[in-house]
Length: 395
Image 1 (tube, rainbow, N blue to C red):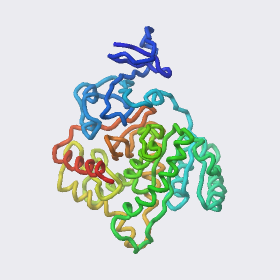
Image 2 (image 1 turned 45 degrees about the vertical axis):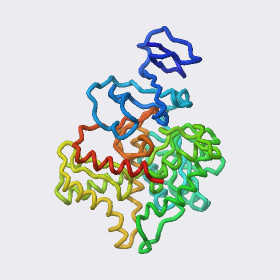
Image 3 (image 1 turned 120 degrees about the vertical axis):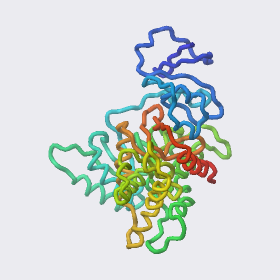
Image 4 (image 1 turned 180 degrees about the vertical axis):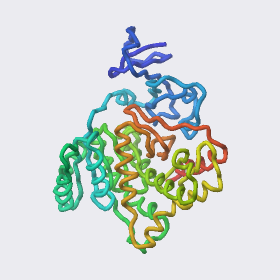
């Protein structure tokens, strides 16, 4: 086994890496080890924690969620040197506190901001806010810096401009071009938003590319899963050439599944599915293709489908009584899930899996995501796989 030090990390390979000097020192000085692979079929996935040795042999697809039989010690990662950015993926960017920038101060963005100010003092040093409406920036800087209590720690809220959007560790995209008024919805509201929001996001992604942004790019605007994929391709494309010079796949994360889990928990209590709180899971997009499972260990297909139906139509029920559903998404999918990401806690978000961004329970590390794995029944796996294939095929 060949051993190298690349960007301060111990890299092991059963083949020689051109241009790198071999390392002959002690391995015990390194908390993390990176095992090299050359896999051109999965080169969009550069680095990820390796929980089971079998995962190296699997395709970069939904099979990654299946629990393996050969668990490895913590700190072992797969490193795919087929991707031209593999050295960049080894650079450490972990901090005690992070600087966040938030774009878009509409209904979702402003409520998300409130949650971050109240709950993020342990992990956020500052939240920079940007909106095309200057008065919104002034209002929220003025109001939220007055949310204060002695002996509590709060991140400072500051106003930023277009030029310093990406002078941060995590960028949160909450802008939305079009949200139908209550009573004017036609079809799936989230998909209506895709066409316009993807245009805005493409422009922002190009700016991230130009600035060489290396932090987390969090997508909160709908539909998050589809927008994440669109962002990845647009930020890495110059003209018609896909050149891998934009955002790396594990930099992009979608935040829409947290509220679907919260809604499933709400309805499971009403349906008497008390097992959901501990054993239940949600998979897939923040939309009608969502999959709810009453229990990952004792799956009931009929009850899970009923729970799924109640969960995916919850937003429509709120619109029926005259309100836009934005508070729970802003807090459950947004503030709570983003803060759990930065703390390295298990949470729901959409991460790169094959040729799509797929919502699943996961834990963020600076070198890729731990994806929760399961011994899943065929009936449930087939439901999840149908949703997964639909996300890949979406154009």
